[in-house]
Each structure stands twice: as structure tokens, then as C-alpha cells.
Image 1 (tube, rainbow, N blue to C red):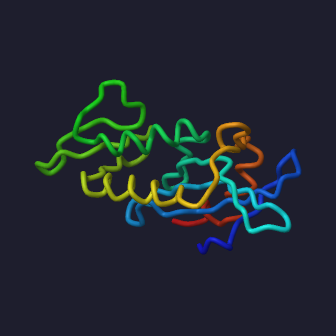
Image 2 (cartoon, one colour; image 1 turned 60 degrees about the vertical axis):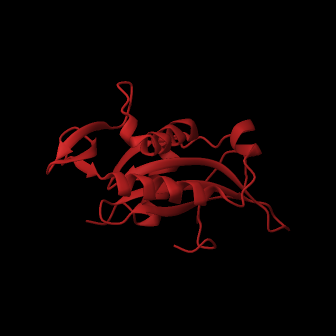
Length: 158
């Protein structure tokens, strides 16, 4: 999806907010969805929120959790017993991150994949003002999120 192909959301503040889908990992269907506000009459864009979607499962829905997910990818090999999203396991004789999901197939992420996903996350933040993200973060309510994901077609795949 190109940067100008935003899926516009219904927001109670009447802001012009669109959803941008960024693939963090194609093979494992791990996506970063960013809420981007576009100002009328200017080309300025502001990052207002972000979430992680793995296949059809929403892993994070607010920016602080999404940032924590990304940072846990970054510190892959240090290990962290308080890691909310991953555990470190040996898979096929190699250390991997395990993203376990209730009742679904486990996803194993190699160190290189983790590093690449973190770097893509970092690149995705370039060029946006993050002041609105901190001062007035967009809240992905279940209703807004369901409508946006349906509109994007992300839930119809696989």
C-alpha cells in the first residue's frame, strides 16, 4: 500500500485520520497499522497511533504497547522474563522468538527477522510529527478498528 493510499477512519474528533498498513514480515503476515492524520490544505502528516496485527489477530492496539512490541524485537537476544509478547525458545536448533497465540499456530521469529522488523518500524516513524501521538493519541476503539480492518480487506485474506 502506497503512502497516499490511506484507509480513512471514522473519528469522533472529525480529524482526517487514515490507516496506513506497513508489512513488517510478509511470510508471517505481521503488520504495523498506523493512524495518520492529514491536515487539510497542507501536506503535513501526523502520527496519531499504531497497532500490530498478526494474521487476523490484533496484538497491540495503543502506541505504547506497539512501541514495547518493537523494542522487544530489538533486544531479542538479551532475554527478558517480563516480555509480554514473546518468549525465547530453541526452534530447529536455533534461538528464536516465539509469538504464542491461544489456539493458533505459534509463530517463530529469527534474530534477523526481528532485527529487520524493528528497522522497518523505525523507518515507518520518519517524516511524521509525533507530538499529537504523545499529546492526543488516537484510540482504536473496537468499532473503529473493526470497520477499518474490514474496509482494508486485511481480515479477508487467508
